[in-house]
Amino acid sequence: MKHHKHPHQQGSNGEQNPDPKKIERRAYELYLDRGSEPGHDFEDWLRAERELKERSEAAPVRIAV
Image (tube, rainbow, N blue to C red; front, side, top):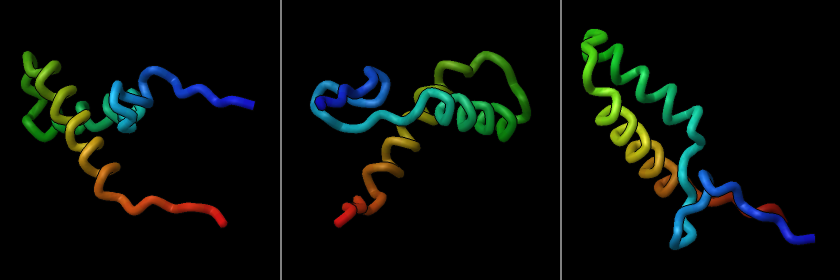
């Protein structure tokens, strides 16, 4: 049985992309940290995505044996 990755979870060169719900949550945290100042939603989303992607790349890969 072949498993397909959801398009939000795998990039063009095979790297894992963070879950959109996690990105949304982190972007909201960034918004709150800035004092709820509007107008930076796109920047917050990109920063959150980048942070989560960096964390997942730095995390050790676990392989079940």
